[in-house]
Length: 204
Image (cartoon, rainbow, N blue to C red):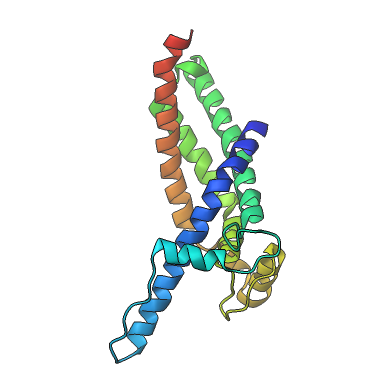
């Protein structure tokens, strides 16, 4: 569990800026499209390149970071990823153990495709449990609520969702989140177990 938490922390140093830039580019594209549709005159599209988005994000005011808004949501992302890892990896190992007992074979002899299925199920469960954290993280990274008012912190996001939009909003996107993480878990753990099965004979 400690290894999973440390790995997720390091990964977030790269993942968070990537997510911030991606979401801001998507938001700018949507706003540009709506403006064009609302106007009858021919308006040139708003520049929405990676470099222009990066410049905007770096220019955002953030007292706690010298990188502007590039690491906005880093804390809440850790709060999502670490619980996710703490649920997914123990479940994965537990499912493998039960499968090995059921088949009466050593854990290391479980076929990669069956281990991948264990990873897929554990990932789907972890994804469902951490969906509210993912919603808060996404809102915080975007920086503003539906009225254009900047969010102060994760608690401010949670407060506005609960008191303005409703508890159900915390579970927004749970179906696609569970689906794509389950598929990703199958691919990741399948590839991991296959690779391990090929290199283990050379390591012993």
